[in-house]
Length: 345
Image 1 (spheres, rainbow, N blue to C red):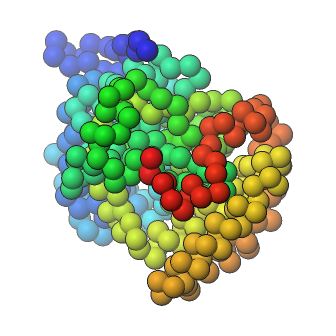
Image 2: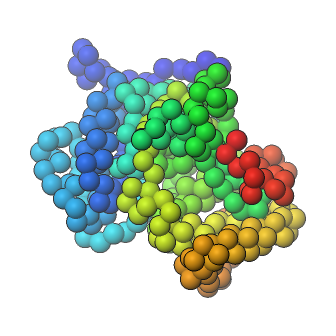
Image 3: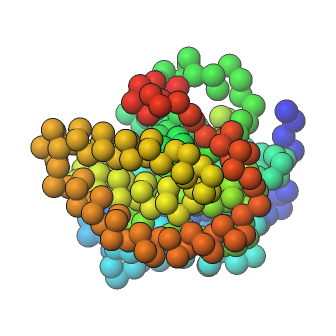
């Protein structure tokens, strides 16, 4: 598949600027990783028009002196932690005039050609509204952190190839973009008008699963999501909250219920509801046996408490859906055992 070169505007004889592109970095107590991320964005082979840094009331000093050291950035500091989803929405609103907005966690460090390869693919791929990066583990870049997100008909979701050797993943031999269900927002590119048209990120999610939920709504409107293997970023994962923290467990398992109930078309909803309930029961039992029952039960209880709102939103979402259920199902993982075994293929 040929990929067109992004439109560029000469900024100097040695530097090009991707026209209509902004990069938004979201930080919460990112420590030295924030500066590594900012330095990598400022050093891109094709520079964004704007670099927006949103800080969610960090108290670790990670933003101190940052704007002085990197005058290219625009630093926004929130007085309270509004969450990852709210910071992304702020970037989408502020980047008026930009067609594409790239989002980065402060614990993600993009390679030099990351933005150039994402923007080139974005302009070439049919129906692209979101593009996922090739995420490598920061502490072991020979292994994948993820190659796009997989969504199972049960409502479970995971990063494709997570933890697998990067050299043996299919993307190692086939570097062409491939379609995935969702783009992990740790390092992804979004078409601004398409995202705003479906309501942006859901700020009630705060963080975790907000990118899957957004991708689901984009797909319901007929947009497509692609993974670009040559757009590489190293990702720590859970640097602010911890990947296995109670915070991550609560939000992830609350939000997966909301994502399923709000977005799944009726035909698929009833067809796979038993699998959805089984997945929730199995994960609740598993974490209870690990001594974390109070956390996951609180997440599930709050998910149920939020369902009246979610179901009201569901009606509005599906009034504007343009894809049929079977088309959508072909983009999902299937099989009863898939969420339990062989998830990271």
